[in-house]
Length: 240
Image (cartoon, helix red, strand yellow):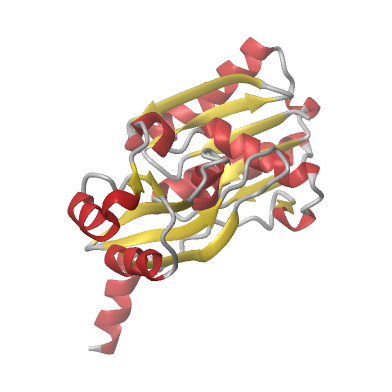
């Protein structure tokens, strides 16, 4: 199965090609450059691999939650390519993809992205080992206070916890205070989302017949998980 994976939902965005193994990956942690770097990265990967778009089985794209602008770039690019090449596009949840990358961790995985003002896009998963074992959501994705997410973890077990996402520095104090010795520190390279992780999870969903994850080039939409700041301010102004 040949899959192109795309991620622009986080700062470490890029693209990856996956067959039975990782064929190639381009990843650059500069966030705001997604719009400029994504298509050249895809073109270079496809050229170097000698692949044509029509040969792909699907495109997997991280469709949120995450950066509002980044999500629009990634999803729009994936849909345009899927339309041109007449192949399915698979929307992959960003938080689930980050958890998927640490499959086999013996405890629970807290997957979270900073959403500012103490809030995160967060979820909690169990991730069994094996290519056929998709992450199981123990607490589904939500937009909530990081301390509320941590409190849920505290109240629902005593297992070890690993944390993936970009929350380690900004929430270091509540992580240490609330998780204590339960918190298993992973290398930073394991905690950021890789385009290859998006491709791999998309391929696994497709292989297992999760047809609800496969969309045509029109129907897939970003999952923002909350309203944009500008929309919130506009609605507030209208009410006042």
